[in-house]
Length: 81
Ligand SMILES: [Zn+2]
Image (cartoon, rainbow, N blue to C red):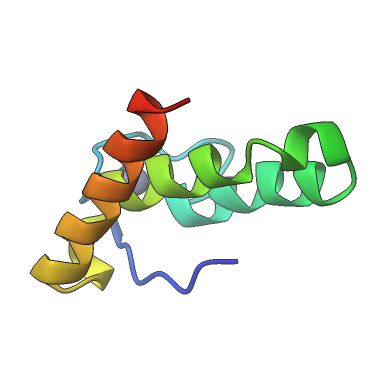
């Protein structure tokens, strides 16, 4: 799992704003699809999209330069299929 120090406040993620679900934080919920894709090669093909979407919505763990690099990788992957 991505090491993430995203904080939930009053039941909401302070970064992406989503509500916690069944007591799980945003980062804990992110772990579920990671487990699913680990057990399914078809899902694992989409790993980059899963992780990069999560990371883009939770930028506090990255330097500004690292974050920009990630966004550029995402744009390049999306534009070039
Ligand atoms: Zn979040």
